[in-house]
Image 1: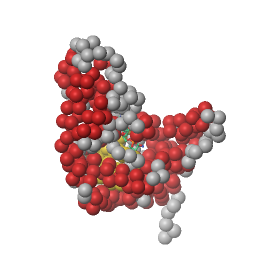
Image 2: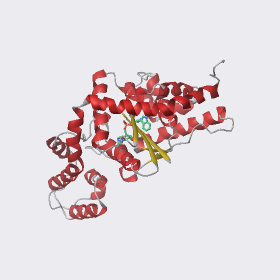
Image 3: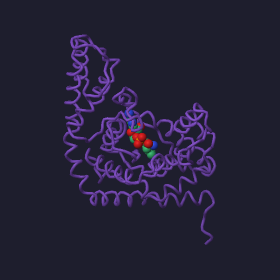
Length: 336
Ligand code: TYM
């Protein structure tokens, strides 16, 4: 069997980039016969960039309902909240003790903070918490706890999966005594959606405020699409699909035949207004039904609680004995 694992940080409303980069490929992968899948809400990660408890709580509910609305089969997939697995922060400490500080100095999120501070002439570490700095170690613990082989993610997470490999190798080398405790994980990237653009053409991201939320109303979806930035070519003028993030968005959710047709129409001068209407119809087709299920699910928090609770119990059946072995390997063994 192949172990597949991925998580989403619970700091905001899930958007089209999360769906295309992680949720959709993960659900497809979980249906393969040899798949053993672990999908979770990264709610400890959420504490790093957010000090608004209500927002985190709401986001956990929304992201749980989102996975289920897209048809995640919780009989086949272990679906849980990171914060329900106390073995994860404990493993994080074991890994923190072997992770090089130099390795973590190179992490994108930390480097971006340092660069920004330096540009502004401030102390390089101003505002940087230890949570932000060690973010990749917590993520390594998520992955290594369940010995995942494959991690479906968008491009922005590749570095973190590579760091998890590095940390795993180091731990195996130091404590394995011939045994490979940890499997070396691999990021799985779907090239066409590795970085889904947002309304302004930059990566779609909560932090750029350029997202298309998954489950707003049809009207909100239409309004968001209306805000997609296009060039100023008039109706009838040929458009350049390869330099249009509207086309990139269309591509991520359509068949090759639909893409070829849309490309041709743009080259022949389809008006941007019309093109936006096409994109709306495409997305409404992909999201409409799931939106209905989502609305029902979000009204049933206690059912969601039960599902996540059962998922955590299953996850801990693996995590608890494995962590015990790891504790013993590093020298934390019973005296008896
Ligand atoms: P997060 O919550 O930022 O994003 C969740 C997933 O969505 C993908 N994604 C995108 N993919 C394509 N285009 C985009 N514009 C886009 N925006 C987001 C992300 O790449 C990610 O796959 N640290 C992770 C959560 C995490 C995790 C893990 C993931 C914690 N532990 C273990 C995998 C394995 C994060 O913050 O993702």
